[in-house]
Image 1 (cartoon, one colour):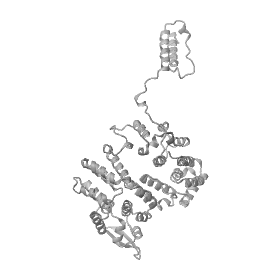
Image 2 (cartoon, one colour):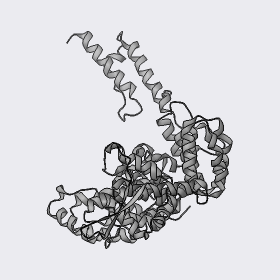
Image 3 (cartoon, one colour):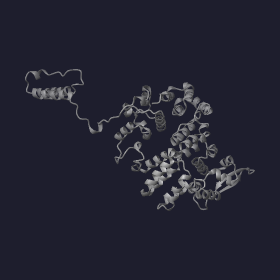
Image 4 (cartoon, one colour):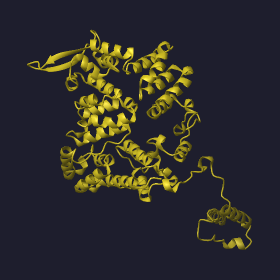
Length: 486
């Protein structure tokens, strides 16, 4: 190697050392020729000076790395052990089958206890925070908005209030009115009266539909004002809501029309069983039958129709023929708050039918008032206590996703699922790789404190590969629930 090449290599080495000065414990070794007056000394002196300056002067951070004041309330931080579990369960490289449902369940539990995520954990909990931004605290929402800035630069979802709710997209406005109706139905209607008149038809239709929550006689005058609305779709929504309010002309008319479009037939060898069938118009394509039934019987109170038909509620529920007819009346019963009839119809569903119903009607179920959503769990008891534990867990997840309220105590306990648990556990012990690994996590996450302890004891026979995350969830939820309220 020539002297020139050796000199260049020495310069590079000196530059690397100089530029890392301040993070290395070893002082920069000055080449012997630097002190001897070599002509390259001036260049190396400059490099060394630059390194020394970098030691005391931090360059300006790029804009995307700019910081913000996250604030900190120690009383609202989860216990340290819980923070570690959260970061492990929702680590960026980890993927759980039921992650979205588990994220919603975890965020809802933290919010119910008045706890916030620690700002230091935000980068590790991106996927958890994405489960539902609306239940996060202000600092977490701000951090997320900086990580994922909106296209229009508008306010984040969680900051919506009465003074700015009209600035948000239609779907967000609809959700806001729906939530406000649960606590202040008259106030939510007043906001609609002030703002909807000049909105586009698509906005009026969406937001007006949110008034279905806690619908009552006080809403009649406002809904009747849409009788001459310029958009047919808006008139249809208003008419549909009026048809759910007893005492209105639309309500009586809806029952009369439904009575004319349904028939009671005898079935079986001796004709003892009754079957309710819709009078499908002649020539209607089979692919459109479900749509016709949904339109014809939408908003019809099933208990009132049963009375017209001379059938007891239980007999009416057992006699519903096609699946789409049964699903329509189940939804009607839930929206009308007729939980006795809803439970009778829901008892006819197996796990597969229940899951399909919940997936197809998630938005409608989310629009129920909170007391109705809590009570709706009891309408699907048979479905998630069936023979297959896999199907039971699927129903539990679909119910929580749609209702966003935890199951009542004892709904997912060990005794209720004794038969299905026994079969699944035997298969899991025999071959852990062939069973549904998410089952233990779902059973733990949706059980009450005592039921979680029971499940933990029963799961001791399982391989650690099936229980590690489930036990971590149990530790997390136990710690959060035991944490004193702020």
